[in-house]
Structures are given as structure tokens and as C-alpha cells.
Amino acid sequence: MKYVFLVFLLTPFLIYAQDDLLNEIDTNTDWNGYSNAAFKGLKIVNFESTKLVAKKEFTLIVSHRFGSLENGFDNFFGLDEAVTRLNFVYGISDGINLGVSRSSFQKIYEASLKYRLLRQQDNGFPFTIVGYNEVLINTALDKIDLPLLEFKHRLSYVAQLLISRKLSPNFSLELAPTFFHDNFVFLDEQDNSQFALGLGGRYKLGKRWSINADYGWHMNRADNSPFKNPFSIGFDLETGGHVFQMHFTNTQGMNTNTFLGQGSGDWSEGDIYFGFNLSRRF
Image 1 (cartoon, one colour):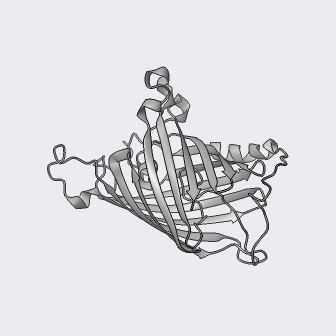
Image 2: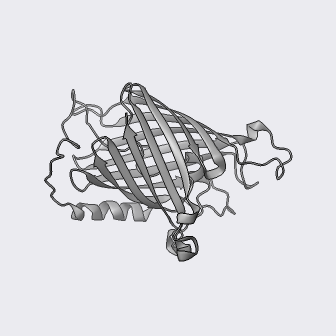
Image 3: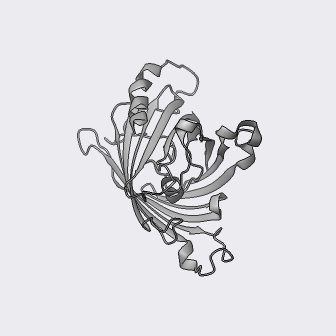
């Protein structure tokens, strides 16, 4: 986790001024006393942010996560081993979102519900609090390898509380206490019910650019587990109706239970993955 705090300490020195024709993209004005735009993307990097899609708005997020960079030209720096996730999010209201997604990593299908509970106010409540729940189906599990496999073993569940604060016009932080339950785990010693604490942040570098980072501390990982806590860093580029996110992380899975429970990369060994998310509003 020390790397996360190092990033947050260094980023203020990276500020630069930028004047262009797109000043309206990222304003800092508050609306009806509520703090606005703590995060511009629906995700920080791996973790969900407290941003929601607006009422009757439809957003498509196309995510790619390539293979490990450590193999170099053998897999063309990960391009030969890319995974893709398509995520469709609809705003039932300004405070409630429904989402469905499909990831090629373990062929996971997901349904999600995201809902705002409280919003940060000027001279009022200091945080934005959002709930997030997922149901996931791992369709890659094979009955040939697992003859006792039943449909229930394919299911996973996630419950998160996303707590963010916009500390200044440029700097936002988020905590994400997380519970997830996998009906099937890959290690006998690993509890099916697992707990984690996420920490993430965003620092604006200009009107359109920000640097983002998040870290997940798995709190009851099995002692013999080969998996690692996820640490990720990236940049957001805002271009009107698009948010383009580029990042490096030590986990290839993009669903909550996979990046928290099954991340295998190691930053110290160069075992990291490059990826990007492209979102488009309709």
C-alpha cells in the first residue's frame, strides 16, 4: 500500500496549465450545494467509483486487458493474450444504475446494481456514499474437470460500499469496503466468503487529464495462496462524451471477485498488465 501513498504525495508536483477549446468538459461548479465530479469515470481503475450514469442515459464501456508485459516479444508484450469486457449501464434514475456485462476472462456474465445513498454537500455531509452489488456466473468451469460441478458453483456475489470525498477541485479519494463470495474457490484452504478494503484516488492534471490509482487489501486470503493484492495506476482522458482510461495493473481479471481474489501479477517482477477502458454515453 506504500506505493499508493507515494503516488498521492508526488502527483501535486505534476500539475500543469492547459487552455483549450474544451473548457466545459470538467467544471468544478457545484450543483444545488452538492460537490460535483469527484470521479469522471465509472471506475477508478479496477474499483468502481462513486460516479453514476444519469437518468435515462445509456453508457457502453469497452475494456481490454492485455497479457503480462514480462514476456516481452514472446507474446508481443501481452497483445497475444488480451481479454475483453463489454459492460452496458443504464440510469433508471440519477441515483440508480443497472448494468450487465460479459468478460472473456473465465467467460463471466455479470448483472450489477449501483445506487447512491448519500451525496457530499458543501458545508454539509462530507462524503458521497454509493452501494454496489453484483451477481456473477463463471461459465468457463468445465464438468469434465469438475464432475461434481452444479450450476450453483458457478455463482459469485459482491457487495461494496463506495465512500468518496472530493477534498479539493483537483483531488478525490475513495474507500471501498468489499465483501465477495465465490461458491467455487480454486484453493481448498480459501474461505468462500472473502473480505477486502479498497483505496483509490484521482488527481487532476489539467482540464482533460487525471492520474488515478487504486489498491485492494484482501483481508482473509489463504496463507498458501499464490494470488496478490491488486495495485493499479492509470490516466483518464476526457473528450466530451468519451472517457478513455489507460492503466497498468497486476491483475488481468476485471470483475471484482477476479481482480481481488485471483490477481497473480507481481509489480516487483515486471509481471504487470496494460489495459484500457473506453466509455461512450448515449
